[in-house]
Image 1 (tube, rainbow, N blue to C red):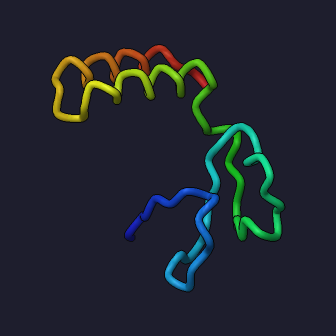
Image 2 (cartoon, rainbow, N blue to C red; image 1 turned 180 degrees about the horizontal axis):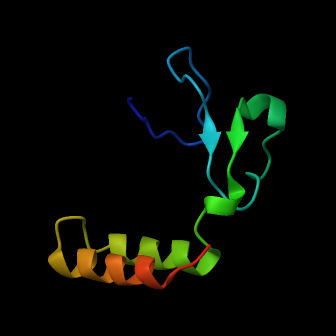
Image 3 (cartoon, one colour; image 1 turned 180 degrees about the vertical axis):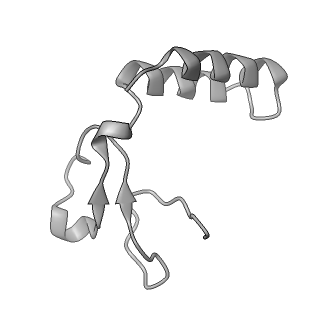
Amino acid sequence: MVIKLKRVYEPPSDEDGYRVLVDRLWPRGLSEESAHVDLWLRRIAPTTDCASGMAMTSASGPSSKNAIVRRSRIMGSCST
């Protein structure tokens, strides 16, 4: 099975397949019809604090060992 990531604001295409939105809040300014989302999994999305922590650690680059360690610590301490 191939899983592709795509921003919900990007227009849908024929190659998208089954579209799943993983976010706690519905995207601002986007109707359900225009999003073409088949499933919304808000309960498994990271909390706001956890998501902002992941964004801060990714700023140092994916190849940085320190960033990977920080990200794993954040994910270990985040709960849904």
